[in-house]
Each structure stands twice: as C-alpha cells, then as structure tokens.
Length: 425
Ligand code: LLP
Image 1 (cartoon, rainbow, N blue to C red):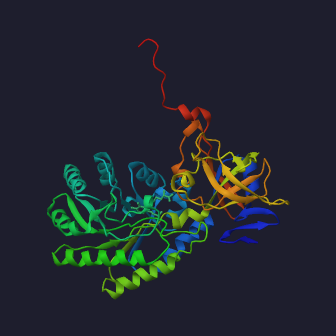
Image 2 (tube, rainbow, N blue to C red; image 1 turned 45 degrees about the vertical axis):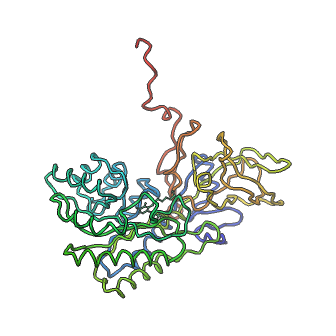
Image 3 (tube, rainbow, N blue to C red; image 1 turned 90 degrees about the vertical axis):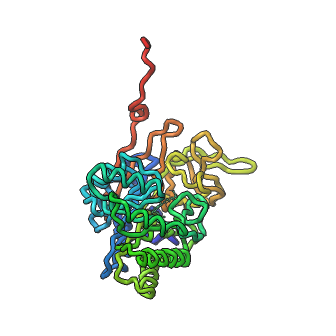
C-alpha cells in the first residue's frame, strides 16, 4: 500500500518502506534523528525535468542549497545535472564530486571578492549578478585575474509568487535582483565593462510555488527585457528561469515539472524565443519528496489542554515548522493498533517554537519511530547545533540497499575549533 500523497513510500504489512528498505530497521541500526533519502525518487524527479527539456538547448542546474550532501550531488551529477550554487562552500562541494565548473551557475546577493576569485579560477559557467555594486566588484576581480566574468543579470520581475513571504523573492520589496525598470541600464553598463562578458538573463521569483501563472508572468516580463536588451545591441545567449516549483506537503497540487517546463517552452516559442538556451534552478522539487526524517518518541505527556508527544528530533534538526509554520506530514514507521489521540509532536529544545507538527492524530507509544515526510529539501542543510545537539546522520537508499552518506556528528565535534582562554594570558 502506498501512502496517500506520498507514492514513493509504501507499507509492507504495517511497516513503512522507502524503496525496498524498512525505515524502522534503519532507525534501529543507525539511531535517530536520522535523515533518509531515496536515490530513485530524486533520479525520477530529474528525469521529469530532463524529458520535458529534451531536444532543447538547456542546462538543469540543481539548486544545491536544498540538500548538498555529496552523495546527493553525485547522484544528480550522474543524471547530467548542472548546479546552482550560492557560496564558496557549495562550489567546493560540487568540485569535490567531480562536476566540471562549466556546469555551475553562481547565484546569491552577497558574493565576496574571494568567492568571485575562486569561481573565476574554477571557471564557472555564469555569475548571476544581483546588483550594480556587485557588477562593479566582479568586473574589478575579473580584470585582476586577467579574465572576463560570464554574467547574467538577475532581474526582479515584480510578480507575486503567492507563497510564504519569507520564500517569495520576486517582489519589488525583496532584496533580490535588479529592478525591472533599471535592468536595461544595468545591461548597458555591463556591456561596457572589460571584465564582464554578458551571457544571459536570470530570475527567480520564490519557492514552494504551486501555480503556473506566476512563472508565465515572470517569463513574459523577462522576455520583454530580452527584447529591449537585444534591441540595444547586447546579445543574450540564455534565459535562466530560476527554481521554485512546489511539492505536496499536505494537499497542495503543484503542476508537475514536465507540465511546468512544457508551459514555459510553449511561451518561449510563442514569443519567438524557441532557440534560446534555457536554464532552470530547481531545488525542492528534485529532493524534497525523496527524504524523510526519522525520530523516536521519548515521552508522552498528555495534559488538560494539549497532549505532547516528545520526540528526539528538534528545530535544530528540521527548522521548517518552527521557522515558516510549515506543515509536514508525520506518520508512524510501524502502525500499531489502538485509537489515535491528538498530539503536538515537539522536540527537546528549550523553546516553545520547537515543534514538528501540531494537533496530529497518532497512535503512538514511547520507543516508536515516526517519519516526518518530504524532509529531503531544506532539512539537514538548515540544521544547527543549538542546545549543543550533534547533527543527525544521513542515509541514502537505492532499491534494497542502504548506505550512511554522512555519519552522525560526535559530541567532540561540537567544540572542534573552539579554544579555552589560555590561563597564562
Ligand atoms: N535559485 C535561487 C536563486 C534560489 O534562491 C532558490 C531558493 C532556488 C533556485 C531553489 O528554489 P526551490 O526550487 O528549492 O524552491 N528554506 C526555505 C526555502 C528557501 C528557498 C531559497 N531559494 C524552505 O524551507 O521552504
């Protein structure tokens, strides 16, 4: 039986499996909290994009901020993915798994000189530049390196992605991108710089977008600019439409990646831009549904107003519920008989905001393992050591095989790099 809304998970008897692997058994073998990722689900997600893009010049750049474990990068690189990075750390991770820098685009509002220099040395495919001061700095750094930096300007199309305000990025009031009205002048400036080679145009309007309309509106706004920029004599090779496609956490029904890509390509064709290379930067829609977070129930604390199910995963392991009020499904790894009660599933961290789910009907006992679903994106990567909690281990499954792709942090890792004040100072 598959779970409603989560066909990648299924129960054999009462036991939840990800691909061919029983999650309860993984929790017992490796401890909890434990992130588990399905290779098959992420490969499948990439193929949906790739199939729809087939026959077109394109580069699918996985936004690795969603999940940057080396085994995830390696799996996606083998599927032919490029990568969207936002820091020197992300650059070194992709290089560490052998991805050529020519398949990497560099986004982000705050690139430092050192990051620019390293990315130029590595030879990244394109810098997505988000402001005029950044353009000036990149020009300077590129000239100092005796080279020209390949550049797209990230324009802010001022469309409402109708998603959570913290993850909406294409509105006038957001810190991201160059205002639509100022973009043509910015391209003129870029074209004059000896250290800049204009390559394309870029936008990204937000995350967890569940409708097509904002994408198409953004594309139209971007194409208006492409036409204006080219009329000014500045050629643009590619159009990068960012990431942001949503996934199903509860009852959202986002378009499939294939439908989204087909709609974008049709609009490009309709406006006479069919030959242009298309770049996309999806993150969540590649890895989100591929992962679960396993956690063991420690205590049940029924009360007059609320019942608390205290588990061993917390906001430091998975911050999305605490940070965005995000709803993520929570299911038992082994179903048990008995009536469900309504529980707030909370962690051990000393904050009332430390919850994973509220008012969840569950039949549970201490020692049971629960799975938080759709935790493959923005899960482990946002983890911290708050309350001096070591970060969880990560396991990848492929068919009936499972492999630890990141070991659990040890207690002594918590103070690595720290130094006591020297007594004789
Ligand atoms: N490209 C750029 C420039 C981005 O800023 C992002 C995400 C992406 C691509 C990938 O977006 P995706 O396809 O994953 O939606 N931590 C939040 C999500 C933050 C998204 C930040 N930018 C969450 O847990 O919901």
